[in-house]
Length: 100
Image (cartoon, rainbow, N blue to C red; front, top):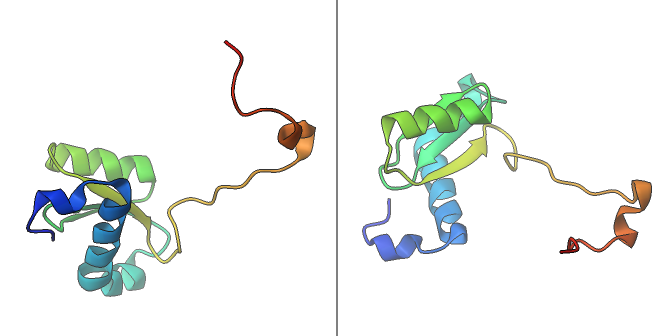
């Protein structure tokens, strides 16, 4: 857990702290007993909130720690979500910026 709140001044630093807390405090137990579920880790306290779906983990975390700062992890996976894009329907040929 970061002693100085300034350490958590960016999404990258929050993610690093969340991953560190997961590795040190929760990984061994969760990967043995809750693989495939989601854990929201409060980077301010180190507390973990586990649920079957990501929305449930965040909802429970916010209920228990309304002022918490959370990092979401899928237990046993390299990331919480897989993001991909394809060229189907001409996606790559379109601008990402929407006209005004």
